[in-house]
Length: 368
Image 1 (cartoon, helix red, strand yellow):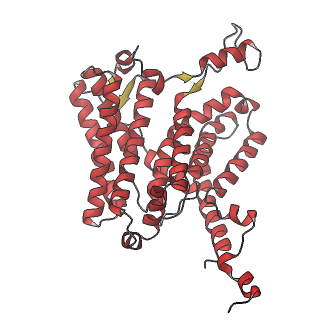
Image 2 (image 1 turned 90 degrees about the vertical axis):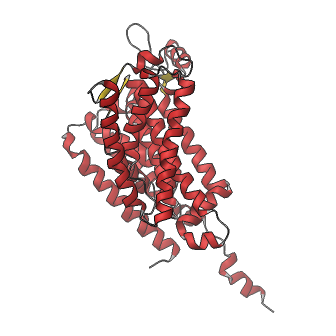
Image 3 (image 1 turned 180 degrees about the vertical axis):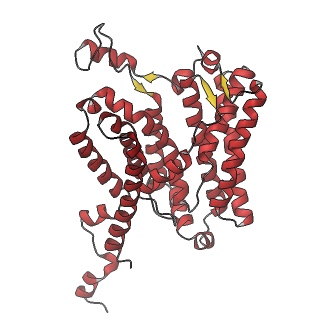
């Protein structure tokens, strides 16, 4: 019969300190990265970067990338990649533009149709990966070229030879759903804050920041929902199990096929959402929309703590990874540094994040 001493020494019931638990979190590196980048720009950048308008300036591109990055992170946790996500932004933008401009459909029809179209393509990617056993890297790399080429051909077809489709803003003007996908939210609140002298205003008294760009709200909402799904639902457990060991997960009753196809559909729909938001804001769409975003989304996920091998990662980590990207993208314009250093800086952050995450994880878990 085991003694009290042996029970207390049993590692299966050994308690962990708060510090140890925090160091096991995949988003630790991204949070540390946000702190380091913030300190760097506090020292080197103009103080205007951290005013309300400056924060909105770098949070807007962060939000657009973050929507893609969070979806990419969930797919990577599930053990797969989607390199077609950037081309899907262009393709979905074309589909949305055709629905609204050429066919004159209202947003209540055009938006669901665009999302459904993207989801169908994502499902096809997932089915090809599962049925053929080919790496998702190869399948979606092919999708990258197919969708980019289809965007070029489609735009020329529907515009009479141009690679840009204009008139989206006029087509959706006055639509009741337009404010949900474009412009700024909570304008009344910012007007009140300006009247109270709590935020910066122009000489006319109008606030310099008229509201919160809607993509930031979508970004935050998606991060919260994705985090809840991953940490508080059986679907989240299935995603981690599928990415950790798909064969073991399947033998344990996890619907691996359904999980992977759903994740591919999610990344495609996230790309379509970004396309809808950016196309309405710009008033047009073009074949180069979303160019290189597939790699930036994966970088965001990796900085956020996702492993390339799957089964480990965090939506909140991708959230902070996107903020790092946005700060670097816009922050360099507030400094005296040459803008060409952007990619060098981003590559360095990626390498540091991967090394940091691996070192911390191995030290805490005892891996070799």
